Length: 119
Image 1 (cartoon, helix red, strand yellow):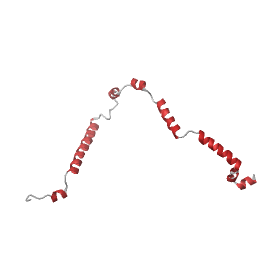
Image 2 (tube, one colour):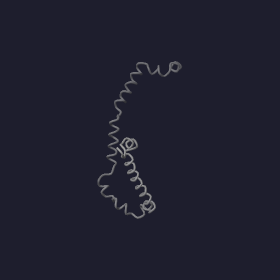
Image 3 (cartoon, rainbow, N blue to C red):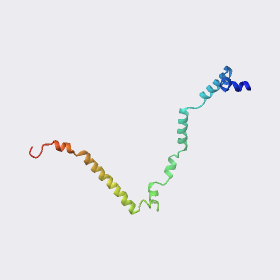
Image 4 (cartoon, rainbow, N blue to C red):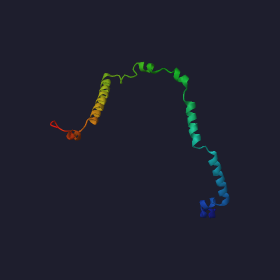
C-alpha cells in the first residue's frame, strides 16, 4: 500500500495487464452505447407516440366555440383597448407610407443638379 501510494494512481493503472482490461472495457462501452442517431430517432419516436392523433383533434371544439365562450376575451374587447390597437395599426401603416416616400423621392443632390427655370 505504501508503494502504491508513492507510485501514484497513473503508474498503477498503466501496468500492461490493467491497461489491456481497461481498454477492453472502454472499447466495449464505446461500441455498445447509442450515439447521436439513436438519440435523435428516440426523441422523434417519443414525440410521434406521445402526440395526440387525428381523432383527438377532430373531437375537440373548434375556434368558433372558444371565441364565442362568454367572458373569454373581455379585456381584449374593451373599447379603449380596441381604440389604441387600431391607432397603433394606423400609425404603423402611415409611417410605412412616409418611409416609402422618403426613400423613393430624390434628395437635394438631384434638385441641385437639375437645370433651373431659365434652363
